[in-house]
Image 1 (tube, one colour):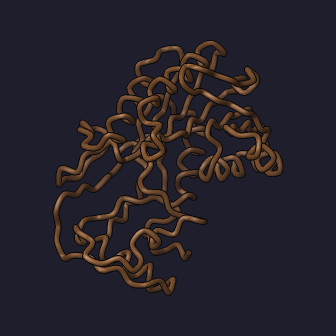
Image 2 (cartoon, rainbow, N blue to C red):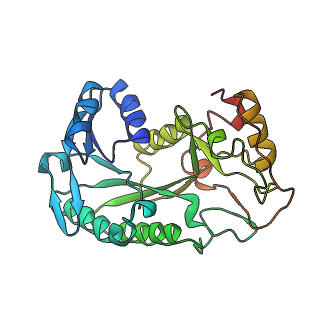
Length: 268
């Protein structure tokens, strides 16, 4: 089997490593020549792939695959938000042209607005941020297409090797909403869920991918920074806007068991 990973970064390289162990051929994309060598050294077949401002540059061989995993965030802070949906449509058009039949689109639990409730895949997301709205619209572009099957995986906040969550708040004070629950997921579970979708051929579904553990921000980040000898954060003891992201489809469709059921089971 051949799997192509469009956007082979922190998550994509970890996924590729697990796929390669099964004998899968993995194509990985980068947008700059400097990154291609790193992919190649990992056993990934490297491809330079660009979709920008109605322009595209890629080797069609990259799209000759059984499964395409698309992991490219909008990057609003880098000023790329306005062209994101156009880029996604170009990618969809290429998938149709080269007859890709199965797609996994990586989205985010950020599509859910913070309306003080628990949510799952059956709920209307009602995005309340610019990035959430863009991702929600991108999801719809994939899910309405009938030329291929798409599974959308919405990751929570990403943690794991090289991504210690304590770095966000260490030493800061008067941080609001300290009693709000966190919605995070470890890299190992990101990869595990994606592998389960591929292995079980569980396409055409929507999956919320978020740890079932949702401690309050103040308690969670205090413990993390203490273990890492980072300066303690100071949260305000209050509960304002929040959400708890749950999943019905991980159990119903994949029977997935989290590798890290408790976020603090992982030692950074």
